[in-house]
Amino acid sequence: FILGICSINRSNLCCDQRFATTPSSFSVIQSSLKQLKIEGYFSFKNFDHVAKDFGNRYHFLPSAVLYPKSVSDISSTLKHIFDMGTTTDLTVAARGHGHSLEGQAQAYRGVVISMESLRAPAMRFHHAGELPFIDVSAGELWINILHESLKLGFTPKSWTDYLHLTVGGTLSNAGISGQAFKHGPQINNVYQLEVVTGKGEVITCSKEQNADLFYGVLGGLGQFGIITRARIALQPAPKKVKWIRVLYSDFSTFSNDQEQLISSKDSFDYVEGFVIINRTGLLNNWRSTFNPKDPLLARKFSSEGKVLYCLEVAKYFNPEDTPNTDQNIDVLLSKLNYIEFTLFQSEVSYVEFLDRVHVSEMKLQEKNLWDVPHPWLNLLIPKSRILDFAQEVFGKILTDTSHGPILIYPVNKSKWIKGTSMVMPEEDVMYLIAFLSSAMPSSTGKDGLEHILYKNKKILNFCNKAHIGMKQYLPHYTTQEDWKVHFGPRWETFARRKSTYDPLSILAPGHRIFERAS
Ligand code: FAD
Image 1 (tube, rainbow, N blue to C red):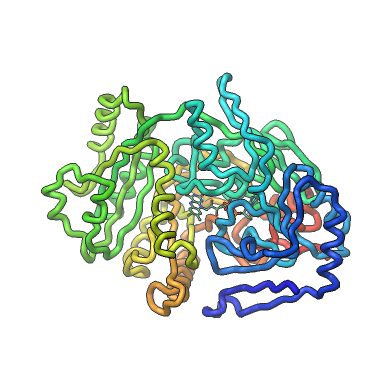
Image 2 (tube, rainbow, N blue to C red):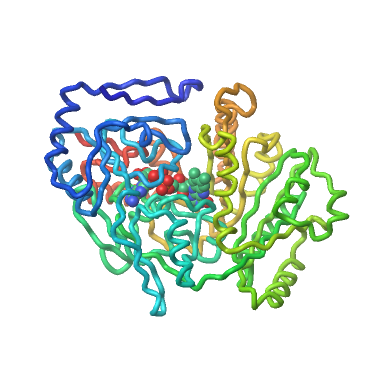
């Protein structure tokens, strides 16, 4: 028997559902998949690891896991299931590194494809021309791409804050971090993709070739095809990073400075920020990695009971350019209006800077605090309403930030390529706000799952009631009606692409956008 268990039974969001596949239907699925001639293999047991993700709230057991060795393993499997038509309700989910939050890479009673097993093609660099790039398997982790590229003195341009994610996983969403204001998100920095559609066809696509599929797949939540290979833009890599944090107590001053930084040509290489509500000992905590520019005066600054906004910026450089870099940074900082004496800085290698979240991961792993439920909420808020949002959410709804960081930074949409599946607010400048909460497994208090979900709901309700024009990033909805509202006028294109490339709705069932044809 195969049991699929949705584990959120403590809140009323989802009951303790149990499903069973009869032994006979299970053996039919097994023998049908076993007929396929593939280079990799199927596993029909030990599924727990693929029925789990970083969110740690949804656990849906599949019927099989494919460990592909080649693209043709993936295309044969999809073609086989497509050819079975409506005689089966088998679905297929590509699983990258499984860092989804709400079961998006899971397939209840379906087939999960472990994309990290797909090692082909091996990473291949083309760095002689004007536009250097690297071809990678979509199951590759960004951290590995970084290390390999650096060996040749190159680097991808746009990142996520955490690099232990796969190329296919982030390109299915967008891949946004502090470099996005300059280079756009990761989906901006891809020249070509190889995709296996829901019919099993293998299609190479780019802006010039099969463009409809190319744009559809970027930010497409895995709905139109499984990305098997990606051609990623590179640039020469810097060796070092000056990493700086400054504090604000006034939101408008903070956001004006952020907006000024993302709009000027000569700026930092990375601009982010975060909110701190009612934290004590804040400045002392920073001592380990950041040094106050003026230690004596910084020590007098008290964060207790306050809402503070921390601007985080970084400038890349090579050691031989240090004097120039310092001068540039001084000029940039002189235009900002942060609280005097709250300038903290650090100098780290480029790898240390990009892989910074992994350091926190290892610390949390040690304390068994990494595999807890993560009821994250990621929102995109148009610039014109960011003040209303901040006043209500940071001033009233949230009383502290002790269960996880809240990131906040603007990005300039004019830098983003148009026509991808990613959904954004209408305005040119929008803020990414990420509530990155961790819930303590057995707590019924403020750090428990129920309380955090309640606060998330309050934030969403406020956005709806106040017509903030918010769009979810890494969106999660449970009905097609909600998805239609999310996509707005772009729903028609999204649905048309689905019926073209995955007409039986076999792919990515975890998003619950389309129902499998049966
Ligand atoms: P999975 O969770 O395995 O899959 C995600 C979705 O993509 C699923 O629907 C899956 O079916 C689909 N998919 C996976 N591989 C493929 C493929 N090859 N082809 C087609 N579809 C595929 N995001 C940001 O933008 N910026 C950040 O800074 C950021 N930081 C993060 C930090 C942490 C600690 C975590 C856990 C997540 C973060 N994310 C961030 C979110 C992250 O980008 C997404 O959750 C991403 O989907 C995770 O990649 P993955 O390889 O684990 O994908």
